Structures are given as structure tokens and as C-alpha cells.
Image (cartoon, rainbow, N blue to C red; front, side, top):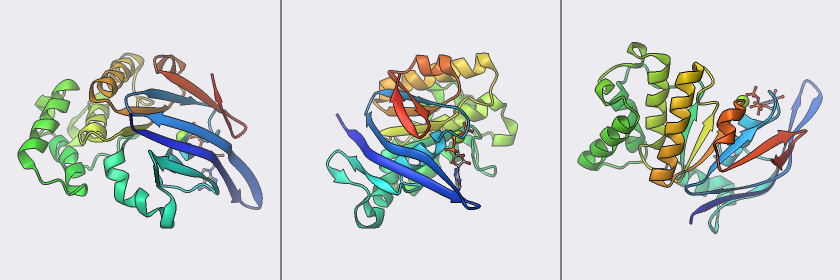
Length: 225
Ligand SMILES: Nc1ncnc2c1ncn2[C@@H]1O[C@H](COP(=O)(O)OP(=O)(O)OP(=O)(O)O)[C@@H](O)[C@H]1O
Ligand SMILES: [Mg+2]
């Protein structure tokens, strides 16, 4: 089973002469096919941790390995070359590109990964859109969709290239409870079916409770609960 292993991550921010230790010696392992929840009060460091796990931000100390590959070696060279293969991202505010349709937003991921197998990619996109119940909206632009539909499209884009891991930052934070629950359950089901490891930063304890394991960030420390 493929794993992302982060050890002894520490991150301190300095702003306006103030020192803020956001993460202190954090260890976490993401395994393919497993779901992890990260909870903690606002400002506790959830987003910071996800950004560091994806190599989009850097810790002051610590290591991140994908199996036996040191992703931070040589100025994070491996992180940059493997990021699209390793990760998908879904955030509270969907960040779909407004002038691309749902289908084109999904297809963009393959273009970034330089995967040019058009027929196979198209089949994958349509399967995922169908699984998420939005295949009939494939030619719609984001402005034409409801909040829930947009979020489904964003989740489709995060998983369509079948990354090893998907990092979700409050993916259902701006949805009503019913819609949020449907999408939460779908993401868990898809993670299992596609063997994707997911990490969800969330304030929703009910959502976190449905995941395989849950951690809380408190005063910079990551505690298993
Ligand atoms: N680039 C930065 N420079 C300085 N401080 C930062 C920076 N990014 C984040 N912080 C601070 O680090 C702390 C952790 O922020 P982070 O966004 O990780 O919290 P969070 O747990 O995701 O919060 P929320 O639940 O509100 O999304 C906050 O106090 C934030 O102000
Ligand atoms: Mg956050």
C-alpha cells in the first residue's frame, strides 16, 4: 500500500514581530484508500498542515516521504515533479475556472499532468461525473450551477486523475447540511472505490466521525482522537 509519511513537521510564522508556532513536531501517515479527518479550532493550523503535506508550503523542520522517496530532497524537486500524480485538491471555495465547462475543468488536470490519452480521459471524466450525479451538467459553466453542484464538480476535478491522495479543506463548509452530508458520503465512497487516501480538514465533527481516523490540532500538536 502506498504511503505518504510526514515526520517531525514544525512550522512557525512571524508576523508583525509576533511568533506563532503553528505546528510542533507533527507526525502523520496517509495511506492509500484510508480516510483521515483533521479537526481543530479556527487558526489552529489545519490548512497549513494540508499545504505542507502537498509541498505547497514548507515546514521549517521535518521530512516528507512518499514510500521511500524523499519529496523534500534537492529543493523539493520530487514534490514538484510528482505533485499532480500524488495529489488532488478540493477546497471550501471551489476554485473552478469560470470560463471552462465542468468537463473542461476536469480535463485540465490531465493536461497539467501531460496525459494525452483523450478517449481514456474522457471515459474517466464521464464515469466520475456520473458517480457524483452531475454528468448531465458536463457542458455547463460554473456560474450556471448551484453551490452543491459546483462542489461536486470541484470534487470530480480533484479525483478524476486518480491521484494517490486527495486533500480537502472544508470541502462542504459552504453547503447546507443535507447537501453537505450527501457529498461527504460520496467522497468517502469514492475514496474507497478508487483506493484514494483522503485527508479532510473540517469543523464538522459528524463528517470527521465517518472517517477512518481523526486527529485534532491543539496548540500546534497533532493528537489522535
Ligand atoms: N502566511 C502566513 N503568515 C503568517 N501567519 C499565517 C500565515 N498563514 C497562516 N498563518 C497563521 O497561522 C495560523 C494557522 O492558520 P491556518 O489557516 O492553518 O488555520 P486553520 O486551522 O486552517 O483555520 P480555519 O479553520 O479558520 O481555516 C493562523 O493563526 C494564521 O493566521
Ligand atoms: Mg483553514
